[in-house]
Length: 302
Image 1 (cartoon, helix red, strand yellow):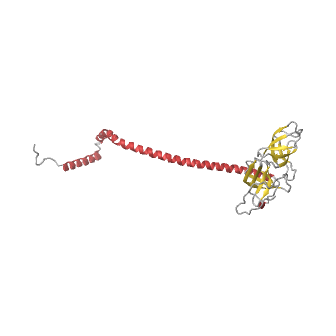
Image 2: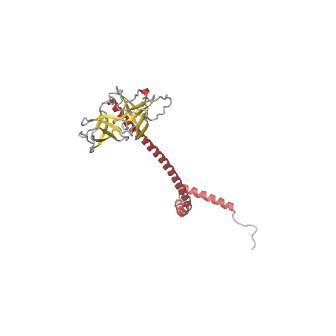
Image 3: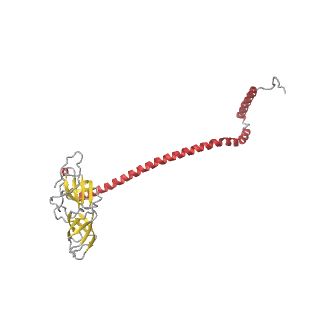
């Protein structure tokens, strides 16, 4: 079948131009008289499912990306909040430690105000709680007029006495040391005795008390003032047990120190007029204390 050499009809360009003119005319007519609103609504209703179908994949992909973005944001925010929470807890612990330290120092200052003698706060530099040697190192020495035999106390009771001194530090012998003995009396009965260390910072012994004496658990033991070293009426220990062993002339009495010898961080140095030690002390058996930076090393004072 042969094709015609020339086609008759309207060209595509004219068709396009006619469609454009028709669209412009319809737009002008709709703008002027608003007659095509019903037609436009009907066409929108017919094409709405097609719009939803076309837009659904785009919305799904967008939601997936938003989900991943939100999850990463939540993970990052959670990590930041955990870090801030850990920092705040660390600060809280530090504040609690500072509060406890303030309470201890306040108690020491209250004790210093009650004491008529000169007192000064000293901090612990080292601790030796060996069963055969109960000693602590303090950050005060001869530069602060610390002397051998000087009483050491805290807000709760008697700690011990200075064993040796250096220029900027000193060694104190605790009342729990086996070589330490301290004259005491019972606050309830006035009974006098001697409290001796056992090597255990939580246990003392009251020795040479006759069987017929009145001693009960709970009795408060105070410094008697005898021996010329510790002033009278400073709390030392509380009786925890009393036994009357058969065939023995003396009571077996145990007491617990009131000063928490194994937990103190600050102590009070007490100045008195006495210079006679209350018990024999081996000054050669002390803690080794390195000289502080910038300070001249000095031998222990006998």
